[in-house]
Structures are given as structure tokens and as C-alpha cells.
Amino acid sequence: MKISLNDILFALSFALDAVEHELLGVTTNHGKRVALLAAAVGSRMGLSGADLTDLACCAVLHDSALTEYIQARDLAARNPNATEPERDREHCALGEHNITMIPCRGNVENVILYHHENADGSGPFGKTWDEIPLMARLVRLADLVDARFNLDQADSDKFDLVQKFLKDQSGIIFSPEIAEIAREALTLDFLKTFNSGNLDQMLSKTVPARAEELSLDEVRKIALLFAQITDYKSPFTSSHSLGVARKSEIMARHYGWDEEKTTRFFFASALHDIGKLVISNDILEKNARLTNEEFAMMQNHAFYTYVILRKINGMSDVTAWASHHHEKLDGSGYPFGIKGDQLSREERLVTCLDIYQALREDRPYKQGYSHSKSIGIMKGMAAEGHIDGKLVDDMNEVFKVREEHPDESGSAAGLTSEDRLNEDRETMKSPFRANNAVTS
Picture 1 (cartoon, rainbow, N blue to C red):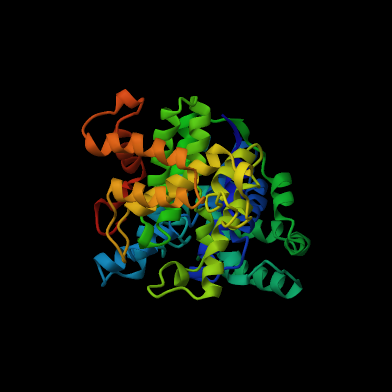
Picture 2 (cartoon, rainbow, N blue to C red; picture 1 turned 90 degrees about the horizontal axis):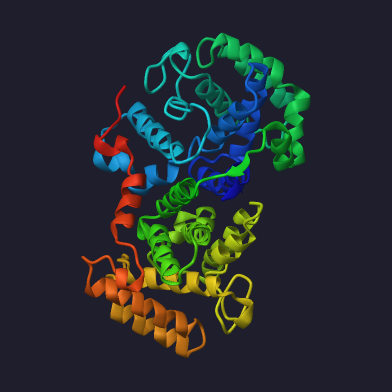
């Protein structure tokens, strides 16, 4: 499947930045600026080609574990006496696992794991600058400089502060070599280019594009990673995206779709709620009824899914399948009010799968409904003209077999076994969660 890894990561960085802004207060496009800052210094140190692309991938994903780290309030919940270094180690370790889901072409081992280390060994793992990879040191510098000085708008005063900071922290946070090269690379003119807001254009000129044939397994892993990141945004929906994606694959095989279309459909289903990363947890986790304004903000998540995915070249079908999952046949849905024949079968199917998965799940306000009750509710929605009744009948046929015979593969219906879902869960399980805290 030909796809641009750059497009995917830089598009999805918008969603990751929204999480980081909510939790840590960093400004929009932080991930892209970290990539540009790291690449500017890295290229002066001899990195080029695929190495620069891998560096940019690590820069964009350096805080990809924030949602899973805070969802369970992970370490704090298990160990309320945990120190800040212990929490940092856990955060970095979860991110290290996440980067293994991305098809980097070079060696990025320990880049995310050690991206909070300091040159003098005072970081969470106690590693000195000569014990960690160059890319980790570059991400550390770029992340810290952008977060500390808010480089979305740069001027001569900020430039002076950055230069002083790099000089003062040489040998402490940053290795002397990197601090010196960064002072040369991060000129006032370079920092001012961030003011234009054309970061995508800057990245396309700075980071070598990687548009290549990815295996279906590689595409699937990327989808699983961002499904997990989305689901961990709120404990109310801790496996929703993965559940929709898994059921989408079952239905795709039921319809006899080929492997590429099945994978594209899986990708769309896994990322259908990626826009929820932009929505505040105050709204996602509100126990009381949402106000009209809050409900309108919640509805925006489908639009944000569209905004995020449309930037990926060659994925217009995936974008439509994912972002139209709240549209209704009678035009009463959102965010675009599309209706009837304007909605493809794939778009209608994601809508039905999203509803079915939500009905089957436990939520704070309800226990998950049985298959028969869920289908009954959906048939009522079909009778009112909201969703496709034929697809509801198909899902009833397929998932009823699986509920009545959970230990069978369902081969009579052309289905694969539930083992694939378990494999997905195991794939996403970080080995670092084995212990309460990651130690050095």
C-alpha cells in the first residue's frame, strides 16, 4: 500500500499537539517545530536522508504516550508516592514502545526512552550525554527550547534568550558540542520562519519525503497506535476505536473485500475518533448533561477528524469513511449534514459499527447491551431513516453468529477468529507495564 509516512505523522501531529496543549500548555504545532529544530541542528551534525526522516518521526511522536500515561493516571494510581523521575521514566518508556509501531528505516532504539536525559546525568534514567543516542539528545534540545520559549512567534528578544539558555546549559542539560552547534544553527532568521505558520511547507523542504510501499501490517500498526492514543484520551472509551476497527475488518471480510481495501477500511475505522484528541477532557468526561455549547464542541470531533486526515495524500476515501461517521441518511447528522446517496456504503458502515460498538460497551452510566438489544435499537434508528437497515441486518447476521458461537472461527460466514483482536491487544501492550515503575 503506497502511503506517505511524512503525511501521516505530520497530519496526526496536530492531534497530539492538542493533547500536549491541554495537559502541558504548549502551543499549537509544537511537534512540527520540534521536528524542524531537531532537523536544523541534526543536519549540521551530518544527518541526512532517511536519518533526518527518522529523527522527524521521533520528534513528532516524542510525547505520544501522554494520553495513556494520564488516562489511568497511570503511575500515580498504582503508586501515589512515586517521584517525578519515576513518572518521567514511565512516560518515556511508554513512548519508546509506541515508536516501535512506526516503520522507521534506521535504528531509533532508545531515542524516545532517553529524550528527557540531561548531559550531566541528572535526568530520569541518570544517563550522561555520551550514553544516549544522538537523536535523543536532539529531540531533548528541540523539545525543551520550544516548550520553554514558545517559538510559535519568535523575535530578537526570544532569540537572545534561546542563545543564552543554550550557552548556560552547555554541559548541564546539553552536551557542549550540541549546544555550540545549536547556537550556530538556530539563527534569528531561522526562528522567525516559524512566524509564517507555513510549517508543513518548511517540513517538506527540510525533511526528506518518505512515500513508499508500506506492508499492510505496517499500515495496520500505525492505525493501532493512533487508535490506542485516541482511546486513552478518556477512560470512558478505553477500547472503543480498537473495537470499531476490529469489527470493520470482520465486516470487510464478510463482504469479500481485498486485503488493501480491508486495510484502508481498518485504518479509517481505527482513526474515526482521532478528532476527540482536540476536545477537552472536561467535556469528554463530564458526568452531567452537556450544555448546548458543550454538545456543539463535542460534535466538532468529527470535523477535526476530517481536518486531520485530509492532509494525508491518497487517502481521500479513508478521510470520508472516518469523518462521516456521525452523518445520517436523513441529513440530521453532523458535521456536514450529508444525506442519502451522498453517503457511500463504507461511510454508512462505519456509522453503524460506531453505534454498535458504543451500545455494546460498558460506560459509567450503563452496562454494555447484549447483541440483540443493540441490534433492536439500531433497527429502530433504521426505521426512523437515520441509518442503513440493510447494513444493520448484515451486522446482525455476522455478529449474532459470533455471540452464539464465541469459540468458533465463524468460517461459515467467511470470518476470521477473535484471535486477531487478542493479537492486536498484545501488539499494543507495552512491555514496560510489567512493573509499577521503570528503573534505570
